[in-house]
Length: 472
Image (cartoon, rainbow, N blue to C red; front, side, top):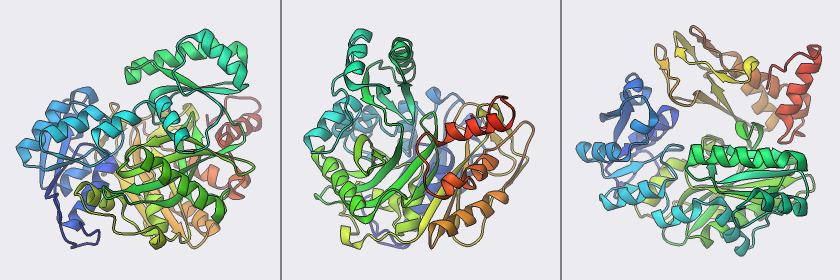
């Protein structure tokens, strides 16, 4: 499948997008450029979804609850059969990393846009993946490669590793199922709470431990691997601006990496992916300490929310490459073809109230004015007049900008954020929070770490005379 508009079509003719919101719109747009017909699915809460206007066909797959709609595998597969789709793109979240869903797609003669089911099954347990990556020669933080079965075992291992430690759900993802434990007396309640949360969210209470780095950056490498043995990386994205392990701001390139470290991390990511037989678009996540040492964290077997950052600095359409790979074609480019030009930043604009611990603020979008202008991209899943549902995540849109260098990109993002106007009863957004982050001298200097948002909240509390922080 040629990734250029009007390019040659391969196996995929009609694609069902098993997702909602901005990622459904994003996938639909590339399909339009490639001449692939689009089938959109929606719940009864999403009857006014923006993706429906881009689709050749649409099918309602159930009531608002995700388990009855976007997680309802029989309904999604039946929708694909009804609409005559020959492929399914899972987007991110929901069923995107569910090996059972991938296998059911294959069993129903549907191309699954992602890695093979057996590969995805291997990647489903992050503790097991640590072992696989260790065998591939990737550096790991001190921690366990096997599940921690009892709290007593966990306390013993944590003492050996040294505090602080982080407890992680083996089946976790998206920043959920994690707890940082600063000291021994906090381990037992954190261990029990993390296991309970992991069982509730992922139906798997297995956890593992890692040493937690306090002065670190969260840096991920975008990879592409086809079925012909080719694998490349497209540089990094810095995702260190986080709240409770949820990414808020992403940028490329990272201010902590030099070209030599970028090449070393990229080569390690491709090597690790090849070692597990990975195919498709994926992301290797690492922590990078203040001395430039990097440590493998996890492999995400899907397109990422922040993928537009990489697209902006490389000019590569990652969704088009996903479709090419799923259709059995080789990658359209080699490693030497990848160049990083300028700088890009993405801010996730959520319907949340930063002054109330980022509580979601669903409601009717009476007004939705999003930015535009030179080198400004907005991926949105809503239109004015739509209702932000309490049943799903609160992401309204992603604002992504490019500049010839980081200061220019920061200025462009600040201008873009200032253009956002959202009105609706009870609806707040994170736009002002993002402006506070971007204009902070520590972030502007590129000296922030994964603890920056907590530090910013502390500064806010101090400036308000000890009142609760508005940013956390």
